[in-house]
Every structure is written in C-alpha cells, then in structure tokens.
Image 1 (tube, rainbow, N blue to C red):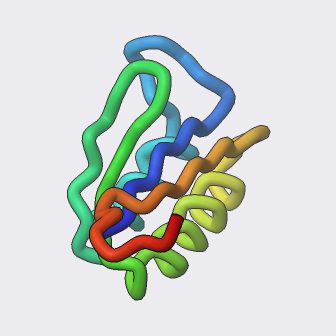
Image 2: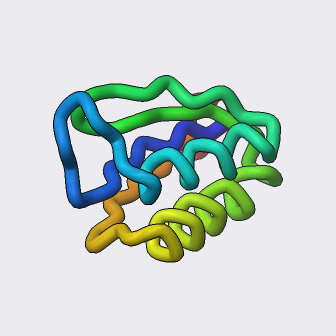
Length: 83
C-alpha cells in the first residue's frame, strides 16, 4: 500500500472551499477513503491506483480554485524492500 498526504490552499479553517471538496470527492470516486484533517488530508491505496489518485487531486483542486497543492506519497508496506 501507499499513503498520500495532501494539503490544498487556500486554507480556510472550518470552511473547506470547492477546491478542497472537489479534490476529496474525486479521490473517493476512485475508491479511496479520505481522512480529512484541518491542515491536510490522507488516504491509502495500492501502488497501481495511486497515480490516478494523485492526478485527480491536482486536477480537481486547481480546476476549482486552488492556488497551491502539496503532496507527499510514501510506501506503507516495507516488507521485501531492499536496503
């Protein structure tokens, strides 16, 4: 599995704008569950699904008024990884 952490700006506490709501809806439409947080959101998905999820976040955020998108993707399953 891989984990995606993302932050979409502009940030308005307690009132996520359409740029945030559209990105989250796009991720959820791809089958991932978003854990929405006050300073960023997270989701987990397979490595095969993650490129589409990342693209959906960027596309929908900017299409709906985002000024900045920060992304961090990491592997959550390190079994079998090489040193």
